[in-house]
Image (tube, rainbow, N blue to C red; front, top):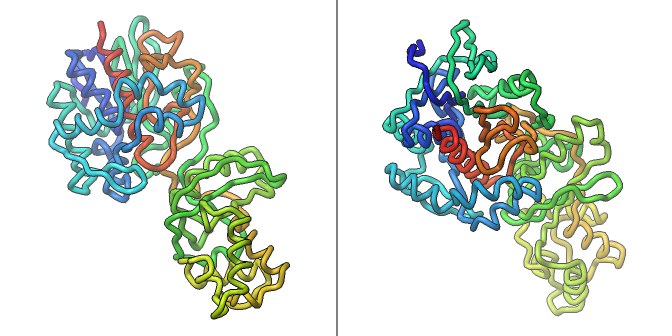
Length: 421
């Protein structure tokens, strides 16, 4: 049960943003209470990064901001300059969680355990004086005179002059993130951008692509385009062929656009093209194939291009060019086959028709419209004492610790602003 003493700051949600905001608020002297509906704090943190928790990025602030797009970068600038990735690492080191760098700009706890990240945050929050109440599900958020009131599912009412909403989005609903915050915002007449799953594997109707299940590419360019060829997103990152379609950082980073197209009925004709020889132009690939056709020893495709593609993937590429086998001799290719082979290597097309949804999504795209949030404090304009941070905001970046970084940085602002009397 929640104690009767009225807190000065009420934090709703004990995830990454909630625990950080509670620590910051309490460390500045505000009586802080955290309400968490699940039996434990930080459940989604525990599941993140395959239980290893990619908690931030090695990128500099400007580089990190650029990955949130122009609108997101504009909003996040104050937060990330105030709490850059280096400061996040320093803070966790102070909390007893040293970090290590990994490929693709990632940062993990040196122990490799997400539990250490969660435990450190919870200990920091309670050590600063915050109280965390679990199994305290909030049903609604209301204005009650000069106070905000969280009405719990059992009817109990918890009041505070300032409240920070950070219940997460709808991704990984088994961890408790079931989209509750969207209903609260709607009830308060706050504008929402329609939520959709993001950083989620893609589905494809192409049987030949699904038959490549298990094949991974460590370096490829993933381009998502409409039926008319308009590019929606491009990422150079690893990918994985699956029973459903495509997964891995590259496909997952472009998945928000697929989810939005499905939600608006505009998914027909969507396709991903894969550049399997990134950094090499069509002209260069063609020239190397032509040159190999006249070389002594009659080199095969894999040698001519120094291709490390798995045989099954090479066979799929060759099939697009009406070539039998998986490693033809370059001298045996017709001009038409060579042209089609170049296109298949540089822009292998795969149809996509959806995503695996919120159950497999790492984050939710959409949420509270950033236009009603002060980027310097994360206060909601026109709602004195109300703050929003973390995934409930319409703010999302690609895989690589960017979304945790945004959660921590917005929570830092919200916690400090809410603690100010």
